[in-house]
Amino acid sequence: MNSPQTFQKGGIHPHDKKNLAKSREIRNAVITSRCIIPLQQHIGSPPECLVEVGDTVTEGMLVGRSSGFISANVHSPLPGEVKEIKSIYLANGMRSKGIILEMEGEFGTLGKKQNEQSWQSMSPKELLDIVHQLGIVGLGGATFPAHVKFSIPKQKKVETFIINGVECEPYLTADYRLMLEKTKEIVEGMKILHKIINPDRMMFAIEMNKPDAIEIMDKALSDLDFEAEVVPLKMKYPQGDEKQVLKAVLNREVPSGGLPLDIGAVVSNVGTVFAVYEAIVFNKPLIERIVTVSGGAIKEPANLKVKIGTPIGALIEDCGGFTRIPEKIVIGGPMMGFTAMDLDIPVTKGTSGVLALTAKEVCGRATTGCLSCGRCINVCPMGLSPTRLFKMIDHGEYAEALDAGLMDCKECGCCGYTCPAHIHLVQAMKLGKFMSKKKKVKA
Ligand code: SF4
Ligand code: SF4
Image (cartoon, rainbow, N blue to C red; front, side, top):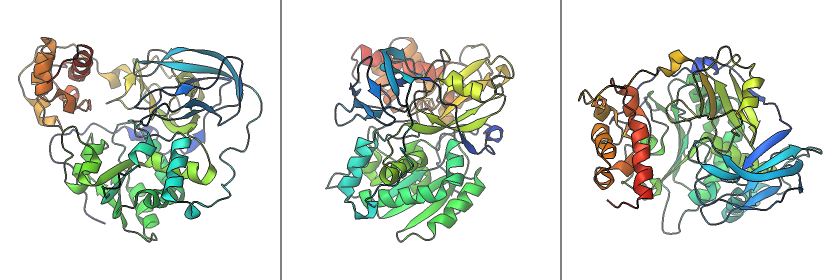
């Protein structure tokens, strides 16, 4: 195994706070009698709704059909009756058509019975079709449709396939628990993806704060009949980001506006690899995922296997409720997650965590004027000047902000985290992107 490495430019070292949930084994979450299935759970065009009010659905039934190449199928997590179809809010504040389902009827054998045909006898195209049909998307947060990412154009060759087990966001331990508890299944998923993509080598990136995961995965990869190794990484945020992990592992940079494939690489989150395994081996659509429920205001932090569509309030109750009134509830990690507007927001394919944070954890101090200290510039992993971008956006100079690299901002939050004046830098970047799009501004 190589000695730990990391990316060079920028980054921060927030306290990882993973102790709250890291020792909690994955357990099944409560199944609620009512679930809310958003159709828009991925990057790309929303699927076409296939059900109507009054329809009966079975567990795993297709309820939303992908509407283009960059789109993903959506399946019902429960057997039940469609009670309502209406516009709902998602964690990021955007709206989506949502199917409100009331549980009714029996759960079948979905996910429990192996496919009769072994994956070894299937062609890469057949395997990719299953990934497409069963609605697999990237589970690291980006929710990019997996069949698109894994469709490698004939003229391209993948040199390195990186499995991303970095999980650098504080509090989150869902991927960590998966690596410890589903090691064999992840390795099987890697074999399936090796068959689909045929890379020269596979590399498994894990940060050093998970030494047991490094050890267990390292041992598990030793029997493979293709080149695969664990790459331990020094702890640094936002190393779990696709482009940062490529810099850390390969010391190579994806060109601005480009894709990892442009440098001969594909990166996939470890949760996605597990979902591919379940889809291919058990014919199981993406109807559940692992979610970390944590934070100082949660009574019993946990890593839960959750049906997509479960309201976050039910998960909090399942974890014993609050120890005190939280200052903020976050969906996702504390750095890149979204503040929950209410407890009815459903878990989607992209929900990695639900955090109830105390006032001390949130640290909401008043904003002052910029001190010109340059700290935000030093920590920006994309080499941007957040203070300069902030001023441009504040003055409505969107074209100038685009020229200065606004679209390269990955909204990682390093700048805002480090700013002694507590200026809302990330929020400004998001606003700048939104306004540039709305006003159709060009760089
Ligand atoms: S949020 Fe954007 S500007 Fe701020 S540090 Fe991250 S990439 Fe740089
Ligand atoms: S870190 Fe904050 S105070 Fe310092 S230059 Fe950047 S915006 Fe200004």
